[in-house]
Image 1: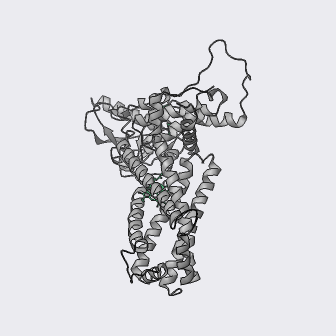
Image 2 (image 1 turned 180 degrees about the horizontal axis):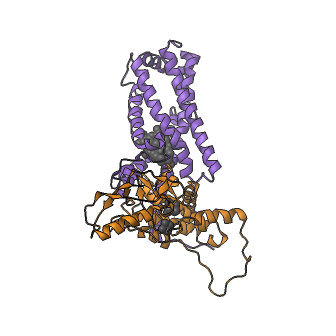
Image 3 (image 1 turned 60 degrees about the vertical axis):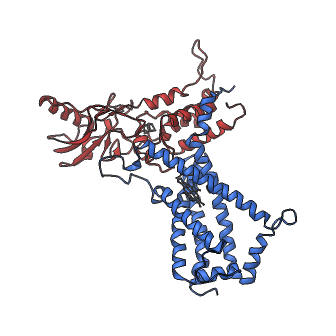
Length: 250
Length: 239
Ligand code: HEM
Ligand code: SF4
Ligand code: FES
């Protein structure tokens, strides 16, 4: 396949940045999207140009590092698929593909397609943990967890913190991410002691980072590679409202 | 055992978008309930002038003698005014925050022109803000017309029944109502579902579908009910 790429190039955070066109030829439909970019970068290196900077790590859909806006869609056109799991067979010979970084005021561009997503880490630091007694590991089954709760927690835990939800949201909100984290720990017995303070603190941090609010449009769920459902945002709203109104919640 | 939140974070969460959305949701739902009652009242036009005007003055005597004349109506007006004020205040603060979060461009912040309409947004969900402004302008016009009697297309009158007949006998008055009701319909279609979700009631995929069905039902009842009297008057079925 021969593909034309229009890629956002930006030297550093202070650079203006612009879209630049490149051609890549003889791309196999079995290549992943990132392998196709590797081909481009080899080409650029050979000609002495600066290779395109993009985030990636595991390349198997679990680490959350890959983060490309492909033709205006976070992680590209395939549902439930991270950029690294997207294959070139979903494109056609001769296609022009636009590639841009996640856009959000809370995600400053570092270089080209790489943005700084530390804001998500700071949200987790604000309350994404449980207090567990130290010492030897507890015996298995000392705390029983209902199947329903375990499944719900696991569904939330599937979030890979990629930030696609923010990139796709017209309000620039990280509510789906936040809802997944709140639901993950808040559904388990081990997460109950901090349930209120976790929801309150993480929400405070979410807003302090400059993310917008959720208007229940659902663009985030359409692009989320982990299939986090919209109702986890409602769970977040519920837990924040009850956390703020608990006696002694402060 | 519960772990406490620090005061700074508690205060910040109190001013968070989550709380503003809850405020907006409660205000919006109160307005929607009011609209149901208002729509029901309008349908009394079919019982004739005496019944309609009588209903109008009855509204002013609710709660008497415990409440003064017009007392209940004024309580309702204050509740409504607070709801409207809180709703609009929250809407504008959230609008400002969404703009700040996206460099002022919302869903249009990418260079590419592809997929600008996103994947699964609805027309209703994307027109809440401008649609709300249309509704606000209409409400002002509406109050000047039928409540304050300041604008009187078709002729002023002391009788609410006659004000309605006079106004809605004119095609462009009816047209302006229809346009406003369409805007209101879109706002309610997304707003009712969104309000419940903002308050934490969307607990599963099935519940999401039910809440959306509820929003459709509320919208159809309110908009349909409001459309019947003006259209009937224009058609000359009521005079
Ligand atoms: C007067 C001008 C109005 C403005 C500027 C306005 C604006 C907005 C905005 C921006 C939203 C948020 C959209 C979202 O969350 O998806 C909203 C939601 C809503 N509006 Fe309005 N609106 C207005 C009037 C009304 C009226 C008259 C009603 C009466 C029924 C209403 C009912 C609702 C409801 C139920 C919601 C959902 C609340 C939520 O999302 O949590 N609005 N409105
Ligand atoms: S909720 Fe989905 S889109 Fe958002 S950060 Fe988690 S995995 Fe990525
Ligand atoms: S590179 Fe790890 S999820 Fe894509």
